[in-house]
Length: 354
Image (tube, rainbow, N blue to C red):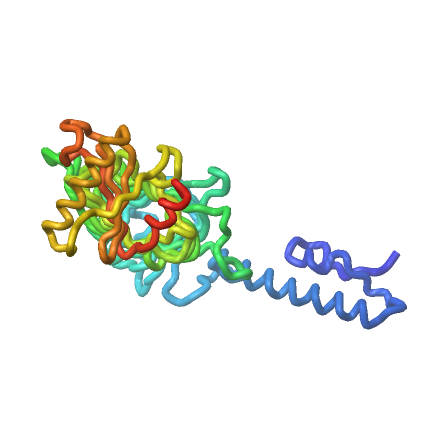
């Protein structure tokens, strides 16, 4: 039996476990195997230090970083006397924490899901992992500030984020919104990073959702009461808009790419999308109103079908979904504007639906 180094049997040195130290016939092959194993070992150690956030002696990985290993609900005593010169809090387990207890900490890093209360406008949350196949802990924000900053960093040593991994983001309505006589537009949601994000508005009412720096892709469902302005990034995005945008509060989507992104109302699940070329001479306000009326009339003639038309710089999609007065525009009729998207109606006209 070939002799093996004793440390090859410890978990950290698994890459060396199967190497034999006996002199082989082909010494060059074995030297290459040893070199490859050492490179894998070094990469594994480096990734472990980066992901765990601590060194082997228990010290913080970087100056200004405090690693919290506790789990569950954390009270103020968890942070007392530990936050001097701390800029980053890193939670290794799923926690429920009140950001008022670390209001001066600008960066919050999560290795698992969390429930964060009173997240401040200047604080940024970085998620190091999401769920896979629905298995994983969500990030839940309660009483969050007007501006919410979320970063996904699912990249290990291989670089890009795992396409099978998604951060489930839940932003609950604030007590102020719940106590108001009506729901209203409130704040900005900033999304960036290499990991995908799934977000559904359940009453928080962000007016602006900026995912322009999110390369992992956004899965988004809006709400009818708020005029949402959504900016998409490079990733493959999925938008659920049927019944969630209307003429009264029509959502604007910027950066929609018909070759990569998915929009339910043109996906074919609601039937063929009708395409019209409005009879207008220029695209001033009056011309747009005329085009909208033509789209609603076409929708009514086709049993409430979705109807698309292009202006000189954008694409509109309408549907006579409220049906209060067939063929007449009403507040509850569906409308969405794809800002800067051109050529989509040619695809729809040629294929019937994407």
